Length: 173
Image (cartoon, rainbow, N blue to C red; front, side, top):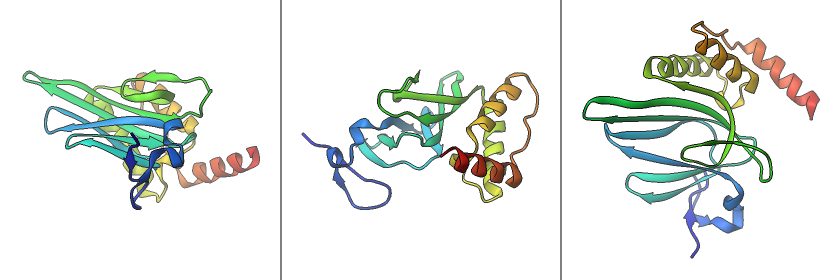
C-alpha cells in the first residue's frame, strides 16, 4: 500500500517516487490543551496526515528544524521542550529523539517552559532580521543551548554573523 503525501504546498503524490522513506520523519500530535507537538521552523519536504490529530512531516538530510513538545495532565504541564535538530542522511550517525525517526543531530535541547519561551523569543528575534531560523549557523544553536544551560543569556545572532556564516559555508563547499 502506498502512502499519499503532500510535498510542501503542491498536489498529492506517491511517497516512494520522492524517496520520503529515506528522510527524517517527525510525528506531530495536536490534542488541544493535552498534547501539542509542532514544528516551529524548518522547511519540510512533505507531510502525511494520519488522522485529525496526527501527521508526519518529512525533512531532507541537512535540513534544520525546531521541534516543540508540550504535554499536560490534570495537575499541570508535564513536558515542555524544544529541540533544534539537523536531519541526517542515510548511513550517518545520529542521536535518537522521541517522535523523530530515525533521529538527527541535536543542536539544541532545552526543557522547562520558561527556558523554552526564551528560545522561542530568540528565534523570533532572528526572524525579525529577515533571517530564516533554519538557515542559522548550527554552531549558534549549540552556543544558545550551552549558555542557557549555564543560566546565562546567549549572544544575539546578527545579520553580520549570518553573513559570515554564509561566506564560511560557501567556502566549505
